[in-house]
Image (cartoon, rainbow, N blue to C red):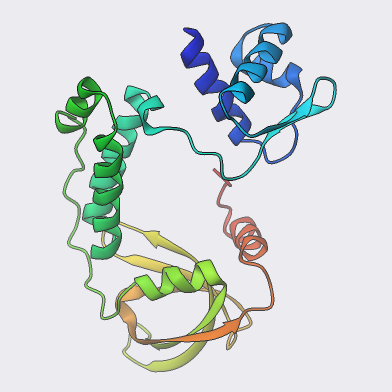
Amino acid sequence: MARSERLLELIQVLRRHRRPVSGAVLAEALGVSLRTVYRDIRSLIAQGASIDGEAGVGFVLRPGFMLPPLMFSEEELEALVLGSRFIARRADRRLADAAHNALAKIAAVLPADLRDSIDANGLLVAPGRKLAPDAIDLAPIRSAMRAEHKLVLDYADPKGRRTSRTVWPIAIGFFDDMRMLAAWCELRQDFRHFRTDRIATLTETSQRYPRGRRALMREWRAREGIPEH
């Protein structure tokens, strides 16, 4: 592995750990000596990486550190292109436009050969079943999840019967033929799943729900048997 690739991989390993990780663990992950890990960490810090810690204690990458897009590998770029193409088919229009814009920003600062590889990418998303149309814009749901705000839904069951639900949104699932909102439902006092094409209207509120979304997400994942990654 070239040194530049090893430094990039070291950053990626650090990003996967939220708590300090020992030099021995980093050395094993990279397949190099402990001395090499310490030397590489010093080099990254000298180049501006926000790494805290010391030998014998462990190292952690501070939140907010950004890698220059030109450091993406070809496979990482392929993953980004494929992801943006999937989003274009399965997500709402705003999210699809955001994916295309993000990819364009990355391409603008890439070396010419890598920029050309984006245009020539041969990974395609196959057409799926027809997606059920939504009556609402999904952007407010994503905004409410980020702010941990409650939403009020006018929701119809499979027989068309409508109820008003106050929910704590935690996730949106994108399937071949529909999109699904996972949320805590105050009416049912439990987690529930709401097809977005059955949400007639949606009202945003400024009320924060009493539990953090990450904790709710962990509980919901455990309940549904969904792995963390």
